[in-house]
Image 1 (cartoon, one colour):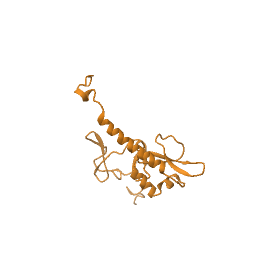
Image 2 (cartoon, helix red, strand yellow):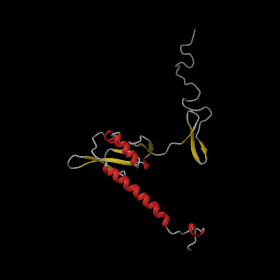
Image 3 (cartoon, helix red, strand yellow):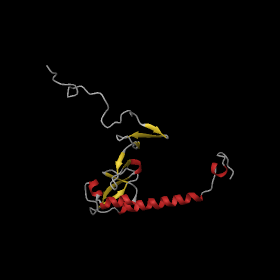
Image 4 (cartoon, helix red, strand yellow):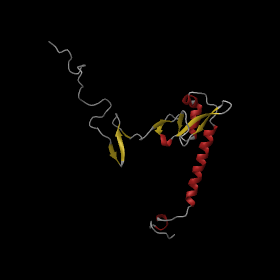
Length: 166
């Protein structure tokens, strides 16, 4: 008389062996050069995913951490016109969309009509977002040029970190 459930054919017991999608012999991520590197199913090494909340950019559809993306919200004015505005502090109530702080991602999102899709309503203007991105880019360039004109102090001045002489 044969068994009702031969081994490995739905007998209710779990089979031993490796999980699907894992590489034999590799169970934990490796540390290479001080950073965590994981081994993908293909056996190739890839960097560990970012930690913390992950969001998707509506422009390039790339996934990134929340701290590197700009939150965008929709504001409706008295006439009923809806415009997308930046929310850099991430505090404005309502549905938000995430965008890399880059003009190229903004143009891609406008071309793909991603704002209307993300907010689930018609969005009339994105000029406030474009202005904010251009202001940020110009202020970052201004800050980087000012850093070269600073006076040196501490370790930079005379290689003694506690020295006050210049």
